[in-house]
Length: 578
Image (cartoon, rainbow, N blue to C red; front, side, top):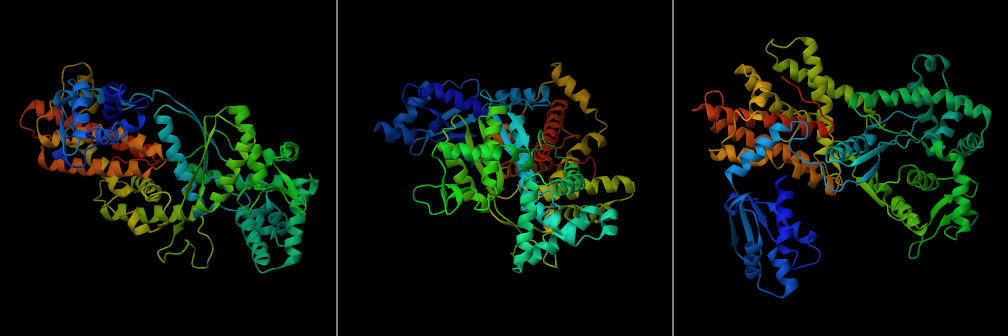
């Protein structure tokens, strides 16, 4: 990776000037304007301020110490002290060659210091169908996991299911009072969802009798009542089958699926321990952790003795540390849970839990085109299965309308599945995760702009060159590996595309730094655009020389591999034809 290599060289050049070089070398970036070289280091200005010296003088001193003759054709000071670097053709050619040799990792070495991550994401409530609100957590968590693993980190994924809370009290009460036995036999999940909505509506309308009965049924379940446990055990497989069918469609799996029920036996011990250590205290019959400057406590037991999400989350932390010894735990939930996780992390600190970084990776809401939370016409939350069905159906119409009889109907359906589901995933991941975004089938399935359909088409377009030219891509790769052929980047657009391909690893690192997959989607979109410019200006199959043809075919191959790998990391499948 070019950026990582430059950071290493600059570290050697300035380590006599400052004790900690990390903040300074992080100021090296790809140039936004080619007039300022390929990379730009904005190191001299902050260094000059710290050392009370002239920034251009500092920049000159850095250049005199910098050893990049094997990387750069030129290194110059510009303006107030910017250091501009132009990469050499031989270096770019060697890096492109290396990328071809290691097709799986794209020439990207694993990170030098890997960490163990636990990524806690998706986490639906089992008693009701997954809905559009679960989409962001699920696809964000999967993309972040994939990127971390690609870079060499050890990642454990845990789907922390809501399988024990008040929602099950609602299901049990509804099961006993409103269940249609015939409908339940035919479509158990749909019927359970119906009775859940009935109970929910009554509680929302202030029906105190129903609310009290729900709490009573929940308490009986938690106390081990045999009848309630029997209903819970009966309902769980139906709900899990429904949830797992969605994960299968999205291509997502988890290392562990440990719900709230798994931690229930340890909750009383958590409360007792926090009380004994003086971290929690009683107030008006409830028990919570109180923080200076905050009126809202972190409740761990209610007046009626019931435990809360906070109790389970503390127990989960203790279990994860004991069993997995992680360096970092990521929680992917929407922004409305920010206070909960802020208090959870403070509680962990009070418990002297050290050596673990906790991070709430929060995200905004999914909105309808009216700018309000995305709902069905009847006002219900949009179910995720229905959402995926609609996306595939619309994608199939597009694929069939563009099909010129080359594709069978089965091929059209397979392509539509990848385009439709890929469109939903990409539309979500291409947003700044902390922002709300508007859900629009038309926009996410558009064949132009920063969409999955455009990216999938770009990939298929590149791959078609090898079909059209009857080129055996494996033979091409083997000839490069054997040393029979080495790329020569002569044209400006060849060089431009090569540089963009080589930014792939850096784009992943930028995306990982603050857990923002949209930085990877931005990179892939830019790569596709750079390829279009290259293709317009550089004939491939009709190149002027054999050397130019081989170089351009290699650039095409690497573009396709990069697009494929990048989309796969996001959880999106490519298609060979569209």
